[in-house]
Structure formats: C-alpha cells, structure tokens
Length: 328
Image (cartoon, rainbow, N blue to C red):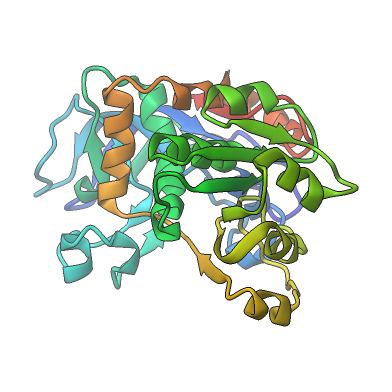
C-alpha cells in the first residue's frame, strides 16, 4: 500500500522470518475483500503506506519459529485473520475477537506471510487453497446469521449482492429460511444469488421498500444490511415486520441517521455483527468439506500478484466480478 488514495504497488520485500511461536505461510490464494478497498481510502481503518493488505488467505506452512507447535512444514492451512494469544479465556472459548491481544491479520497480498499456529485451520483433503481463501467471508456471514437468531421458516431480505450478502443468502437457506430475497442496485449478481440459495432478486431504486415487499410477499422477519452506506438502516426499518430484526454486516465508517421513533414503534431489534468465532470459521470449512458447492460460485477470477494493482482499481467500480483471488 502506497498510502491513502493511492493505487497499490508491487514491491520486493525481505522474506519474513518467524519469531518464537510464529510460522511462515507460502500464500496459495488470497481474496480481495471490499474492506481492502475501503482501507486504501478511509483513515478510519488505520492503514498507512508500507502496509501489506490481504486477510482472506490460505497456503502452505514453510517455516516454523523456535518453539512453534501444532503444525509441520508442508501442512496446508486456512488462516484466521484475527490475531489472538490462543491461551486466554476468550481464545479457549473460541471468541478470539475479544482476546486482549486482538488485532487484524494482513499480509496475504504477498508470496509469504507470518502468522501464529492458533490462527491456522488445517485444510481437509477435499478442500483446495481457493476454498481456504473463502472461509473467512463465509464465517463472517454465518456469524451474522447466527447473531440474527434466524429460525426455520423465516422470511429474509438481504440488502447487497456482494460476497457477504450472497454468503448470507447461502447460510439463510441452508439453515431453513423459507424465503430469501436479495436486493441490489444492479442485476450483475442475480444469477449467482439464485444459484447460491436466494429465492428472489429485486432491483428497484425508485421504490426499494415496495419492491422487496412484493418479492417476499410481505415484510421480512430479518433484514440483513450488507452494504454499509448511510440510509440503509432507515430503509431496513421500513422493510422489516413489527418486532422483526435488522442485522448490520455492512461496514459503514460514516455517520448515519434514522428515525428512531419508526424503529421503536415497531419494536425492531437492531443488532450489529463483526468478525466470527473459531467454531463458525470451522463450520464454514466443514460445509465446503461436506460438499457444499454454492460458496465456490463466489469466485469469479484468479489473478497473479503482478496483476493485483490494476484489478484492485477496477473493483472500485461495479462490475460482474464477485470474489477475485490472488495466486502469488
């Protein structure tokens, strides 16, 4: 990363050396995440020139630091990009985001990355490195679905047809939702959304509330906001039923306003969701290992590391791409 507002650049850096308790991964695949795009534009994310992005990655263990246990050179792993000590009460409970040593793991836009064994999940024989790179967004979506308290038979509206929104649609149907409608501003991902489990797809920027209600046949039990732009909470309030749930997954660093009386008068539950548990990460990988093919539809391209800056800039514009993977 060259700095905020600057395009990415490919540079040659020294190969990482693992410290005691660490290991080095030869990155096999790394996903380009929408939050990576935001990190290069918004100072709220705390990124600066010289940082190496990339938190959705999998690869091969190639070096172990002194005292590192639990893995061996040659193991293929998916990396949980949530730094944690691995020993505290939160880590032992799988709630790694609440570890006192918590931090976000980057470094996947490179040939090699340093991590810790407690952040690595061994890939089963059935899983590819590409599978290992999409576990993180699947786990983020699963955590949101779990936080929302989805029950079999629920009617679900997903705002946003990006990778997280599509992954929410997948989990919602897999966990028993009766109807899942995805709403977006364009139809680029309609076919993919339907293939991943959505029962409907609506586009109507003039009357988004009415369009969603017609698509669902009524108000939603749960609305998942997976975009992160001001105004969508207010829209979701109008789209959810009385005593329904709005679950926020979209990352919005800008101030937003909504009519709290409208929410209060419907007794709407507003829940925020960030990160995931270790158990949810493992459950996402287990779904792939069990033969779920729908999540693999997220991947729309694989590029070389040298091609990353140009493709990264192209992804700032709405395209038919969904999840692009880097193969360093």
